[in-house]
Image (cartoon, rainbow, N blue to C red; front, side):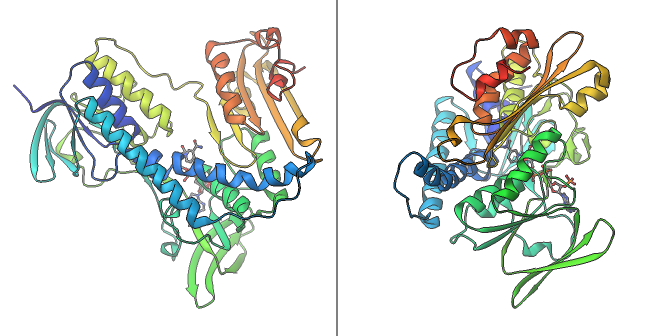
Length: 451
Ligand code: NDP
């Protein structure tokens, strides 16, 4: 049977675009439906605009630090409107680049919503389209859990449209998004309060990193209210009243005249896709796939956040490219989800690859794990005389000497761990790290001199 397309991609985010372009390079006839802007969460309302705001926020400290290096005091403040306009212009520029890349690859774009009528037929806007293979790469969106009054809180998507910088900013949730926005808004000059239900932010991360970032955030003026469960939010004339319960179950409340951000998790965007017209299986609101990104329907595949494996842009891109190589390039391969590095663009920044100390001890037994840890003030902070600490940690398997995990909090942690991740991915031992000559004077050299 002949179809309109060899591959039809639903979703023009990082995973969908990467797959479409790679498949087209192999000569496949590819169509792609996207009913929003091209680039998905990462480009339009995630990684990219967020990182630009992070860069903006870091000048606050640089201006103070400069005084230690002989510069006259600098009195300045950030113009939010100018910043957010520049950020959105950059996003527009990237949208244009994606459009041109897809045009060059001869991927036909449908600016419409796509829905399955059967495994090979899609309703795309007003048209019906058939395809041999279909990729679901629809991503996710930030959720508002069923907490009374949660509609009074904005979501991370809304932040990039704010016309004014909030004087007081309340963050609900202690995950990546909550932590990153708490830090950047604090540095841009808002008074920040963050409410979390655990004792520490960033559940699942290396414990030392969680402690170090949280202590540092508090030192930098963020008010973290921990061990408090969110009960409800009410809106009055004076602003919001947030009802909480502490660990002992006692009621607590805070009244705030503040913009409140709900950073309480994300969810796959599976509504109205017509999955019931296919055999695609959904579990815990994520599309079930095997290691080749195959769903339960033989001609339908899925990559990225909607499969809820590791929800990061480079992971979606790699899953997509592996799929295109396998299905259209004659090079069968899978993407390895082991030792995927990631960063939290908090201030201070944190980055991590491999197993945490707790995970390693659970997997190999406490006696089989050696920990190397170093906490120091980097040379940069000596002249400004600031008590900013860098933390580095290696988790090592005692018997084989293999480095199982590398973790860092401090300036350029993301840049540094990216390099270290290559070594960890290749299975480097602590002896390999030790045999590597340090670059002096840097903070990163500590990774090869730890005892
Ligand atoms: P996360 O799932 O990481 O964090 C959600 C937070 O909300 C947790 O602290 C969670 O607490 C809390 N929470 C959830 N439900 C409730 C509730 N009912 N009451 C109180 N607290 C609640 O989600 P994010 O939205 O921060 O991030 C989503 C994803 O986006 C991440 O998984 C990440 O992959 C990706 N991302 C990556 C970034 C990067 O790479 N730098 C940056 C931003 C996002 P608890 O821990 O107790 O469950």
